[in-house]
Length: 89
Image (tube, rainbow, N blue to C red; front, side, top):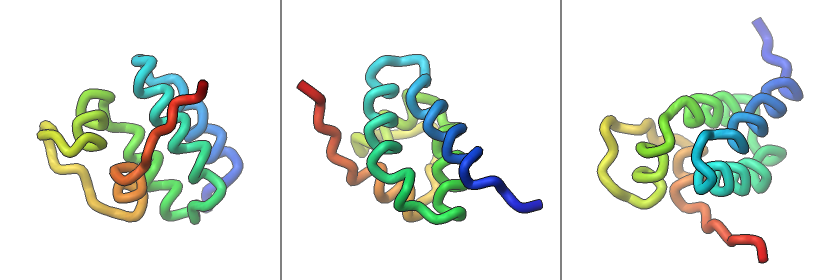
C-alpha cells in the first residue's frame, strides 16, 4: 500500500496544531510548519509516530527530561529535540 504524501502532511499538520495543550500546539505546530516540506516519506511516517506520543512525554523529551518510555531516535526525533521554538510577537 502506498501512502498519499499530501494526505499524510495534512493529517500531521492538523494533529500537530490540535494536541490538547496550548503549549504543545504552539511548539509542535511551529516545528511541523518549519520541517513538513523538507521531510521525505519515511521521515513523515516517523513524525506521525512521534505525534502519537502524549504531550507530557513529548514535552519532557524536548526538554531532555525523563520520559515514561524510550522515544526512538531518528532524524525526526533529533530535529524535534534540537528545534528552537521562537514565540511570535
